[in-house]
Image 1 (cartoon, rainbow, N blue to C red):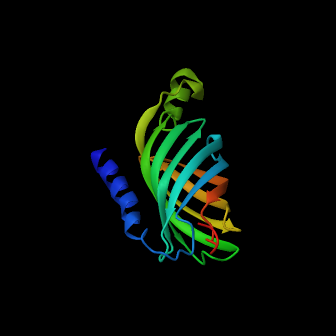
Image 2: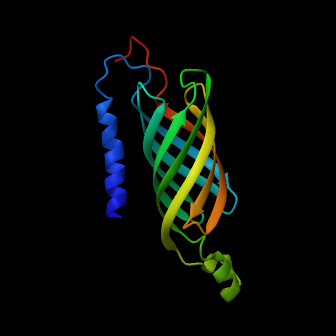
Image 3: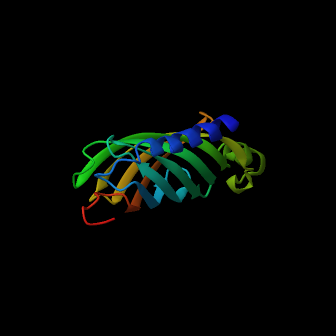
Length: 172
């Protein structure tokens, strides 16, 4: 866990290196609220806080999500293609911690006949993702959440980002 916290801190602090540029094409920070559907847990909601690098098409951040199976907190990173266009594609990945019942659902159905009896378990959550951002604020994302590399679920989400986007000359 210490290595994860150290890695996340170093990724977020790396953004301060590029924060000294006077002319920025995009705003530094953005917050995205998203809602989606997952293959095993139906509805999922979350929030993501991202830092946009100015001279590079990368962003890094922290993603917190909840669904019927549990919750996740992960460090994320994306590579953005054609970031200043009305629609731009991105590809990225996330890794972090999850507290979920997804690893124990089959066992609960076998023992008591109901998936609601599954106990929660802490595990590693890794997910690759791909998506498209429309008008610099609306994001459609497809991801595959994997838990301890044993179970996986497909996730499709729609999010609205506040902040980010192109920086106008007249805004401070």
